[in-house]
Image (cartoon, rainbow, N blue to C red; front, side, top):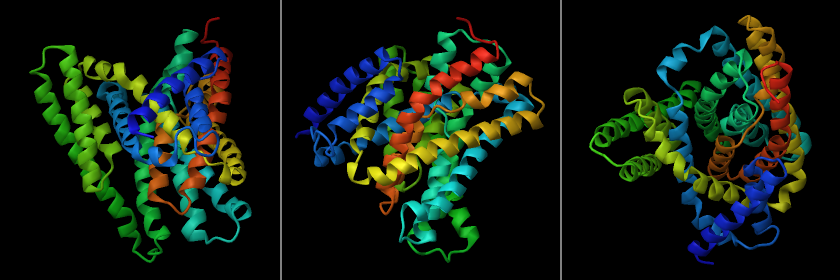
Length: 399
């Protein structure tokens, strides 16, 4: 199958799947992922495996766009005004999910995948999945808040936490990736300073590349007078930055996030992000269908159990962490009681990081990716109703 035919099938059938999911009151990304699973080589085999490999560049491109938009939400004035409670809650709920998922998977891994070594498989897989678990999907949260016109301290806190949650997940993943690669490659005798220092150095390099591209983008954008040309410039900068960082072997996600952060704080022009949002739906359809295409029935027995455990321990870590952070910071009672229920959605960054990890860690990448995909579908079924429940129980939503 040629690549254009594959992209056409993915786009149109994915759109129809998202439409069907919307009719069933489910998030559209759930429909996209299910379409990908149905089209995958494991089921209907409409999109063959060789075609999937040739479309991997779209994953990198979509992740670059997502990271740029995440960076655009990190405005300095908003971060300064977050307050003590949001800082504590954000820290505790992210670390709570990371810690609890890591411990649970490391301890239960030998029971689910017997016959493997702890430091080469169980701990690295647990640590990587734990880092990915920090992320929260802002799209689903925003849609529910908008639908019910929610206003109040819980809603304000929720928006602030979600705005920086994905950024924390990206940084956590970069650290986990750097620590786990020597272990998986059986070079675990490296000094701890090297295991931690190398990924931190790569993060600094990625941020520096992003800042350089942001400076160039800020200058060039001042010369652009029309909206279509602005899209060309911004999109071109994201693509070029992604390509350069991949070539240098550093994180394209961190670099593109740095572009968005600098642009939003230096220029403050909303259209720098609005023009990209006009094409993000197309990228999202292809991105999530591609994610579903990686589904493999041969590992379903193992990955299905891991998916259930991931949903359980991630949700528990998020809820407990949010409650602990709210209690320590003396947040309002509605925030303490209900915020944890509203921090459970996960989507774009979660799936994107899982795809990236699958290519970096082939020894357990397939099992991990299928577990994350299955847990994402489960989460998108369970999380929106729980967010709605939290907003109504806090008395901040309107029927």
